[in-house]
Amino acid sequence: MICNKDKCTGCYACYNACPKECIMMQEDDNGHIYPKVRKENCINCRLCYSVCQSLSNVKFNEPKKAYACWALNNLERETSTSGGAASVFSRNVLKKNNGIVFGAAVINKDVQHIRVEDQGDLVKLKGSKYVQSKIGNTYKQAKMDLDNNKEVLFIGTPCQIAGLKKYLKKVYSNLLTIDIICHGVPSYKMLSDYIKSNGDVNFDNIIFRDKDGFNFKLLDNNKVVFSETMKESLYYRGFMEALFYRENCYECKYATRKRVSDITIGDFWGIGEENEFLKSTKGGVSVLLPCTEKGLDFIYKCQDDMFLEERSIDEAIKGNDQLRHSSIKNKNYNKFKELYNIGGFNYAALKCMRKEIFLGKLKEILYKNEFTHNLARGIKKIVIKNN
Ligand SMILES: Cc1cc2nc3c(=O)[nH]c(=O)nc-3n(C[C@H](O)[C@H](O)[C@H](O)COP(=O)(O)OP(=O)(O)OC[C@H]3O[C@@H](n4cnc5c(N)ncnc54)[C@H](O)[C@@H]3O)c2cc1C
Ligand code: SF4
Ligand code: SF4
Ligand code: SF4
Image 1 (cartoon, protein in one colour):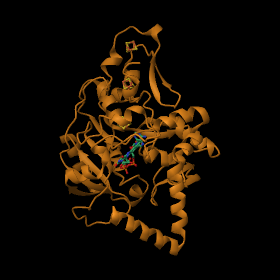
Image 2: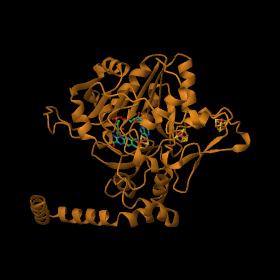
Image 3: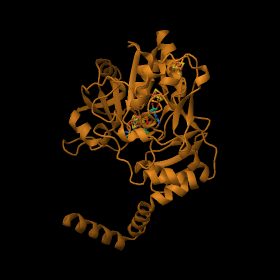
Image 4: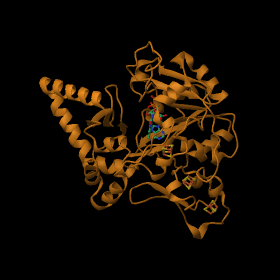
């Protein structure tokens, strides 16, 4: 290993940097990806160590401002995970004839980062894929574009942006980086095993959030081929319960108010709870945290395409746990790992979330009938009052 396994984020910086191409990215038993050096080709240049963001200090910046935002184009907003900020920014970069965007897409039943230069391909980047996206050689591709004076936008998790910056080694004025607020990533193997257990359908897109809320859908040629709510989905539930992220995600150095990118985007959870927000939040509200002058300027350049309202930075931080601390490891994390290897994904997830599933089912039954619904709400109120 280059850094310790429990610190490795799977950012691919070492893989991109190795001049002898002797680093392979390999899955462990749970499907999480780690580098493995083919010693016979290694020349001991230590470049892989020097680009590892887990082994070295990373430059963080305080947010300069906080905005609530959404795309003014309704379709753009409705088809995005929160307010559609990522799409607005990507479209604006591609408007320039030398613009290139990098982001996560579903490719051949896998989630990978890709390079996009046509507006028509931007749809592939839309939506959060709640799983780790494989960077592949996109850092190398981005460097080539930057050296060729293209305007590059790279969107990813904070550890992926930190990995890109370490790999690049120098500051490029033609690079804009956006990180998404991130509470952790499961491996693609877990998602794939879960999908296979549900009939192994063909799909070319994955959706975790739609205009009706937290729903997991697989699409093929724009047709829904599999659909379930978050509560019905063992994978989605486990994701929300922090049951099976990469080990390092539970001690993520990027889960803080200081950020590594020009702009941080996420959901504006808790907006209006303390300071009134006069607009309807139906349709998703993104939070924007510009952390550099470049990020702030870029937001201003895109303002004709977005509803934008300045809010307090503290409101944004307060609403989003991942801007304050890492996700807390589910108490069944180790049990899940063990059982996954013995009986597969569904077996392990069912065993580790028995209580949550039982309580969810009970709630569903109670809330179906008006009398039991009111009774359940009454009991809940009494319990809350007495606590
Ligand atoms: C694993 C994960 C965990 C997240 N956790 C939180 C959270 O705790 N709190 C919060 O406020 N927001 C979280 N988000 C971000 C949130 O869900 C939205 O992605 C974000 O608000 C952007 O939404 P949007 O409407 O602007 O754009 P969207 O159209 O939803 O675009 C999403 C952008 O994110 C990129 N992207 C999608 N999936 C991935 C991936 N797996 N890895 C890297 N990049 C990806 C795409 O390239 C695209 O540019 C998370 C996202 C992911 C992928
Ligand atoms: S030391 Fe150099 S050659 Fe060896 S794996 Fe690292 S980058 Fe590659
Ligand atoms: S550079 Fe990234 S993938 Fe490589 S060892 Fe470090 S954290 Fe892991
Ligand atoms: S939680 Fe942290 S380490 Fe894990 S994927 Fe997100 S940014 Fe990377």
